[in-house]
Image (cartoon, rainbow, N blue to C red; front, side, top):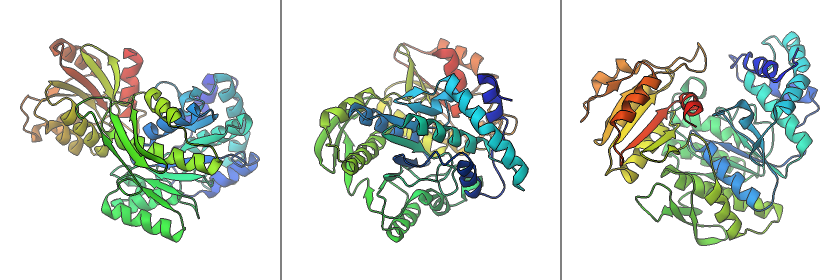
Length: 436
């Protein structure tokens, strides 16, 4: 029985994470038993290997600046579970989360008895609680971030105003497939009949899959580099000033609060999506609102400054494309500075390739470490096993635990140097609790 907030979290986290055969039938049955709370709301559906969270955060800020009430569902959380379900960027209260967990619990137990493969997974329960919450709050729009993939993701039970595919890269291959085309096929699963799709720069094989699926569904595509474009105006600055062209906006200029060069493309995707949605809702596009939204967007663990001097940042570059984006930011923004990196990665990621990317930078002092990990089935990788393969200007250091590694690097930092703590988002979450 759920009586407290702790009970609610234990109930949610105690569920199985995945089932052997992917299906949406269980989720649809679950929602049906709950009275289909997902119906009657307007959605923006967002998938992508990287960039989902930041893109959602920028859209949320811009849409809130226009005066709309905006719900959002994101993952994973960085500080507290409640962040995943938010109304106007305010996380769901402990009371509401507990009450809604209590509401879904009997239905979950019922389906455990009825279904041969058992009842809902942890993420299906998260999704159901979110739908129940927004059914009560009735926001003008809900920004739905896909958990993994798209096609069989538990969020994929709605028809949105617009679908968004930020990027397609290597991640979750165990569940999504071992080629970019297969991964793209899963992400293309959120494309709906006659619903516009906004896409970022995609690798050729992934692009072909998305374009084909969009054509079959008669879904209009807005593609970065074609229907809209962007560029960074202040090349070596950490916080980008961008120029954007697309839709009703020509030579639109905005400043991003979110640091990192990869946010330039995320911002362009967000601006385009917001324009499409406002047009659909019959709301004028106001340049001042968009600028305000971009300038105030905050998202934890994405090139987030936690200490100003010397500069210490957290960046949840949790997969190969994320690390590649971080490497580009270091090359563009910190090429004239010594950069100290403390990294820990989950064992189920491409950690050898990820360390190789970081080791390729001449101005980087790299230290590998480990952390607790989200659970026994997803341990931290033993990075010491691969560091011998890389020739680096400075020897790669090893820290037995991240706390001692942080202290050691802090003592080496000069006033103009930079420390970046990166790797798994779970690692970033653990570090952030201490540093923030």
